[in-house]
Image (tube, rainbow, N blue to C red; front, side):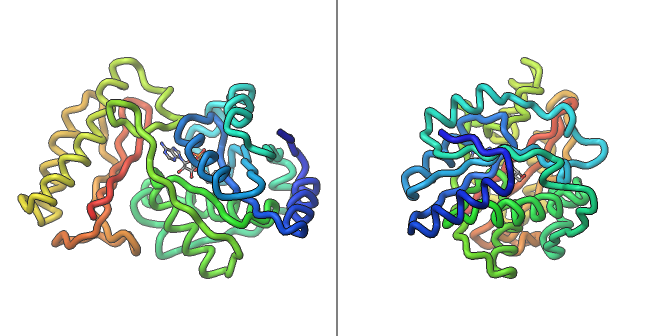
Length: 281
Ligand code: PAJ
């Protein structure tokens, strides 16, 4: 497994690989790797000649009051996981090389970036889209792998790829969960033991919501959300950022639930903000 730190070395490797006619599968990450990330690398390994994983905690996508500085950094463990998953290249650029003095360009997808996560985290998706486009230009991937756990991120990146004619195919992969259903996240480690026990309710509520719709018990989203919010509000120290039923493509709120739809939630438990979603298909 090769570790590449410089942008120019990454680009040189990518151009050489593509010139040889090999496909590149790319998994962008911020490190603190877990089984969710591993599932993306595994899939990339199955479908490509060469697998590149980037680890870069991107300052541009964190708000001023968010956890950029204390975001977990676990380099040695990350490299061991990537070796086990047989990644070929780990790309670990520095902040200085990604955003040198004078860096000014921003990529925005306005129709998708101000709702749901974007409403709670202004500027977040601008930071994501900007760094992902830069990474695409450096890694020259044939396919790029993203998790449905961050459903809105998938929509934003898909839109950007289509709109800007990026020659990469986005592959969306299912959410990997703990045995009790909690979506695996790098931020789960912030939870106390008690909070961790309570956190499973987020998935349970989404699951219940899907059942209520599938059984045609509740097809009005306002009524459904009221019911689900009441359950979430019982988690000690919780604050609901949002829970919404939205169109899978446009992410616009859906009143009468026609299928398919996405039921998505963001909940703070203590100081930790967790997101999850479920597809009502
Ligand atoms: P990060 O949070 O490290 O996630 C990297 C990728 O792993 C994302 O595509 C995310 O959706 C996926 N992922 C996280 N948890 C998952 C789970 N439980 N199951 C399946 N996939 C999961 O998302 C980012 O980093 C950044 O925004 C990034 C795209 C790297 C841009 O900075």
